[in-house]
Image (cartoon, rainbow, N blue to C red):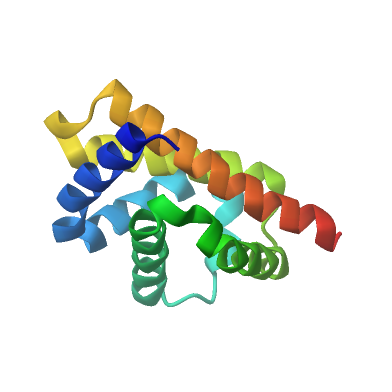
Amino acid sequence: MTEDENRLIRESWAHVMPIADTAASLFYDHLFTIDPSVRPLFANADMAAQRGKLVQALDLVVTSLDDLDGILEALRDLGRRHVDYGVTATHYGSVGAAFLWTLEAGLGDAWTEETGAAWARAYGLIAEVMQETEAAAV
């Protein structure tokens, strides 16, 4: 990740945090709409708690942008847990699409192509680490 990408992510995340629970609700609603196969994975989930976990995980990534190597083990652990939940490689594409859609919808005029590209790159790196863990678990 470049310094400029990190800056764009941090600046946009600062706009998301005041509406974090609403953004997380939008994310899950959109995810379930574009990929109904994901919904059963959350059948027993407390969605309020799940939204909080999502925001917490994203905040960890944003605050760790200058040292992503420092959170690799946490991402690997998250990947292992997602395998246990039934997440497959296909789901990562749906999650990424829903995530970027949510950011664009939530940020409004603060959303730019550059911001989108920075978030897409960050999500791609995270998903790659988590999927490598998934592949190793199979």
